[in-house]
Image 1 (cartoon, rainbow, N blue to C red):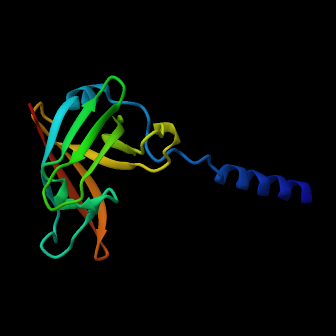
Image 2: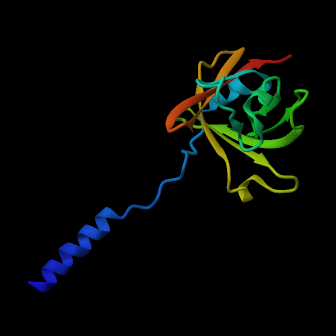
Image 3: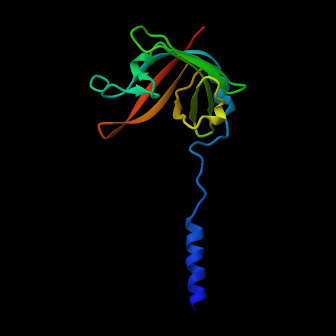
Length: 159
């Protein structure tokens, strides 16, 4: 009887343990990814409460400093670069690694000089929305004053 109880207890423990899934699916949505290929500019950054709260985007700079930033996305190797260019804001430029997965998530890593993407443990997961040939949105969920809020980065195609 004790062996039977021990067997059921071990079975219960084994069935409740699950290998952790990655933070974001890695199956790439090639159609969405190819549509993002090219040069882009962030036209606006919006969120409710923007008149009261300041948000630091991507742990880099004030979210409003991302307006006018330039982004280059290369889809065949999931790389690119970006630069903050607005006056009176922190100057920043970085190589990036990115992809769009089949769940509509945009996975982004800023690469430190000389560091390979697979060595970078920190990244960002945003949602792709309203994608057209000339624009798309990246949406991040953040906690503002105890309430989950969307911060929306509106991208426009550059020439």
